[in-house]
Every structure is written in C-alpha cells, then in structure tokens.
Length: 117
Image 1 (cartoon, rainbow, N blue to C red):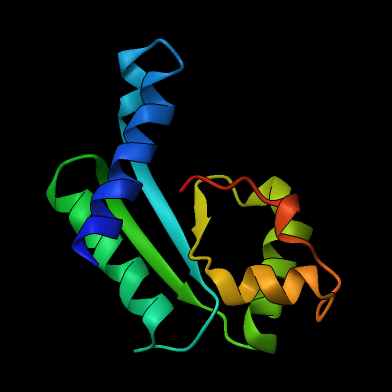
Image 2 (image 1 turned 30 degrees about the vertical axis):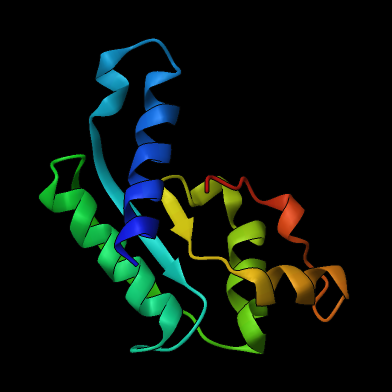
C-alpha cells in the first residue's frame, strides 16, 4: 500500500509541476470520494493516501466521503454528473470498476474521468 501512496503522491506532484509554476504545488485540500463502505480496501487506500500526502506537506488537508452502491457505480455516476462542482475531488478506482464500466454494468464510463495513477 505504501508503494501505491508514493505513486499517487508523485503523480500529483508531477501534474502540479507540469504547469510550470511552483505555486501550483501548494494544494490546499483534496476530497476523496470512496466508492465503497468504511473499512474496505478502497477506504483504506484513500485514507492512507490522504494521510501520507498531508503528513508529507504536499496538501493542507484531506477529506473523505464514502459512497457505496452499485459496485462503484453510484460514486462514478455522482462524480461524472457533478463534475463542475467536484474540483479537487479524487475517486479511488480499481480494476473491478473499470471492468464493470467496460461491460456496461453501469451506464457511466471510467473514460469520462481523468485518471492520475
């Protein structure tokens, strides 16, 4: 899990640095949308990543929201449908969500999201 946290932190830092401005590195807050219940794998990944980014000083704070339902479909649908108001929101994603999307288990598509790692 620590390897995943490091990869996400490096990705966020790389995106920020690619803008050409060091001020972009200062991210005040990230909101994690977790497509499953508290205590599950997606929950642990999001909370561990948020904690690591905060402790490393890469972000000011992290908030978390669990949205279980539909094998991730409820969360992915919410994120896509409310994209204009979800700036600074990251959703933990995994192979099962990608497969469900590709096999049309839910109408939304993971390709409608911006993947960062």
